[in-house]
Image (cartoon, rainbow, N blue to C red; front, top):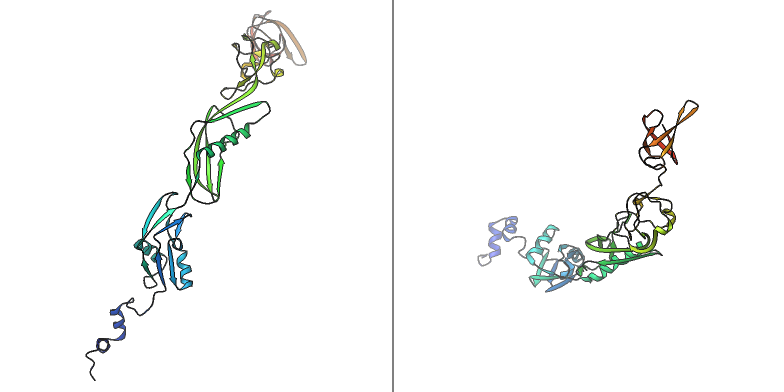
Length: 329
């Protein structure tokens, strides 16, 4: 029987079956691809990662297609931007996910343009939220607060998702005329970006103001002060708000007229002045002895000052316990 005109028969006669399969190769038509993939010309995405189902259509084994659809191909472009991915790049991702070339084939387009959808948050919206949060934190019956944004931030393009803006106010909050407050942008519960806002915060409140020049060691009377609404955010110390907190107190230094009275400007009244005649007392066992003395320093109750024992002319250190009354510890 003649078989020379039959190439397949010649091979069968010359080589074993296993070697024939090796020569022909695995993709020589013995099997059939499970799925054909048709890339889209362009695709719009919303998530952080692009899945194959978003950039392609499929035809073939439905169960296998479901597996292909879930494969992550590449990170999504930044909101409002785009990128191009070709078939070669997608083959790499398929191979990394255990898909071989004999299982799928690409038909039609050889690349796809991926565009990220976005939503826009206006800079004014971010600034208004920060102002609202600050105002709600500082509100009070006798307080007036003004908040200004030194520079309104640019509008922000963000991916789609559940968006939350949070003003990160440090607590306890000590407002200053100029301070930076961060606004954090969350998408689907994850922080996406932090926007620093520079704010000018002015706080106005009724405070006590000197109505005339106050000399050092002066004991405050009602006529020495008046109430005014003043900006207090720039003060270095704590202002005095109540008249009862200042009457009978002593000025620790000279205070110019029209000055906001701060707590570090006032102190308890002097009970002993430099040069005052004082009574010096000292306990010896169960006996208390006293002597006449002269104050060499001034001070309030509890202060240690130098005194001179008039009888012995000795200088001693004693603690003020009352008006012109000192005690040796």
